[in-house]
Image (spheres, rainbow, N blue to C red):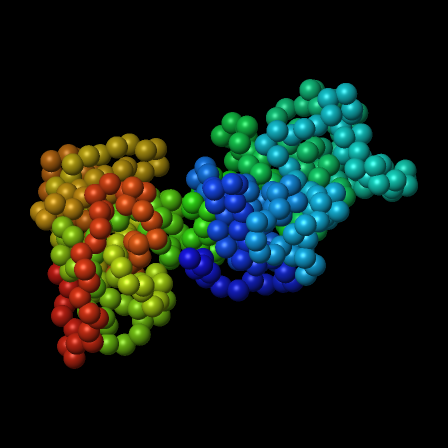
Length: 409
């Protein structure tokens, strides 16, 4: 399977994978991966543990050699080039600072190893400490710094050599939540200020969505989709991407009608949704592959009202659960057909707070509903209750399209 890629890249290619695979004995860690990372891009490799993202990063760094395929750096094949001859640097979760050296000497270590003149070492270290906002700690030892400060020293040490790409392997994993959020902003600022190419490995979807220009979502060694955060969130190419990125309602569906005219942003379809009825949806990939399909609706796209709405599409539900989640209420509603929808609403945006056992309406705009291929994710990886979709009927183009159930003017 080749990844769905939402758009081309801007800028000169710095890193290119051409059908790269990596196996450890009988275990295939990375499968026939193609990707291109551009100059000045913040590119994230995102996925659960064991998906192959760290192995991919280690192949860029030269710590692992591909079993097959080619890796290019600035157009030059480096598949068998050792790490010390590649113009890339890596920052790990463990900062690996030298405890007996000062901050200045830690940052200067690589420059001195390459016999850079002392005056240039001083200027470049001071410049880099200013970039990471640590100009006044150059004489301290690492154990005199906070975790966030140590992380920034590690960044300065990696960037002072001016690598063509900086590789970051879950560098914020050891930090607490508030500091991690602060460092996300710092990393993005530093990357933008320097115009450097960052390749960032994470299992945290929030990190990837917040910082990245583009994201490669990986699953079981395969790259499921490459695109901008907006593309991956709103137009997932598979059920796995839809379920891994954010929260999503995923229900079995089959296409019953296609709109007679093409619609912007993808094919407009009418689908039979298990437990709901017939509703409009937009395909996230076009053409849709053969196989089972899922109707996807993000919880934040759903509005809950006491009265039937005049616009959009809606379904009557019985509220089964309401959970306070700080800025939002998480509400689950069950339709008369047995489907459960989860909604995330802002309490001040609704007139009456939903209560378990009450009858209410859940509604959404037509464009919020998406149709996602389900066959890229094994059944055990899909949310509970989705199962396998029924066989789809052939697509038709009716002269007068039937109005979907629940649709309002």
